Image 1 (tube, rainbow, N blue to C red):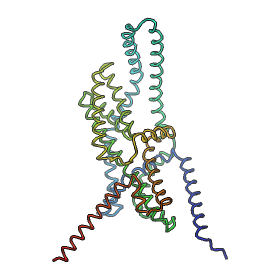
Image 2 (cartoon, helix red, strand yellow):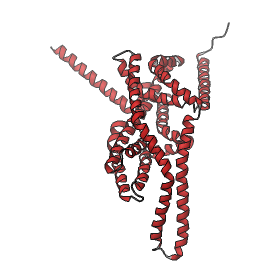
Image 3 (cartoon, rainbow, N blue to C red):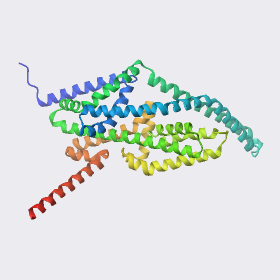
Image 4 (cartoon, rainbow, N blue to C red):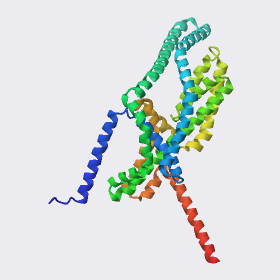
Length: 401
């Protein structure tokens, strides 16, 4: 007869087995990270689509709700590929082909401008300054050329570099369907692994993670689309043709996923293209584009972000810029994109665990203390209090009658 292990022994065995399982899963993910790119995109889509599926599920069976959402996505993707992708591909090819010409014209323009300025510089300082300007311009041009080449080549090799990616693209729609359909079963299976006395904590930690990611992803997608539309319309107004306006607006929207520095990086391509649009050195158009992007940034910061994103991460701008730099050093562009929500997520989980383990507060109070959940939970608590007060008043009126 086997001895019956104590509760403490079972707890340590459970923690050890879960730790080994998570380490193994992490190792597998690292080894297959390129092939898992479509599934990461699918996971992001699951977070974005889950609230919509849950809402439709109140009106119809869940499988039918998912199919309806799929039809809407297919329609949106069809419009994107029919109308926008040809423009983006055509303008990208033009930009790649015109880059050498842009570099030559910039060199000529800088040389001409420098010659005019050099005439006013004393002869003793003219040659050292000329050497410095020549070295700086060569280094800057080589730096820009390397960035363009690296972004184009690196993106395609990262995304399409494995057979697993192609297989993943074919499998992800079916995988996403089952993730959306069996949400309750998956959550129940996860909670069954956790000890009964820890299930409330596990449920609240998952709520924190889900809320942080959901709010951030949906907010950033809507914000990127809004900025892309505003920039495209504005560029049309200042004098760009339709294709160029849509392409530069699309770039601005793509860079919008990077907080703080994204709007600045998104404006650079438009400023560069405006410099050569029509004729080299089109300073008037450059000034118009700069003013346009400043206006869009003001609209974004004062209207769109408070209304759409709602400052979901609750991180100070200085912290945001620091974690973006750290993320880019660790994981390149993808690392920079995920660094902000990941930092907010780690902060909230740490605060919850600290409140529960060190301060010993209740699970509900610990969740309210997390910066990412505080506002929503306090608002929900106020709504419950108002409903309770209303019911009490109605009962008092009934008794009085």
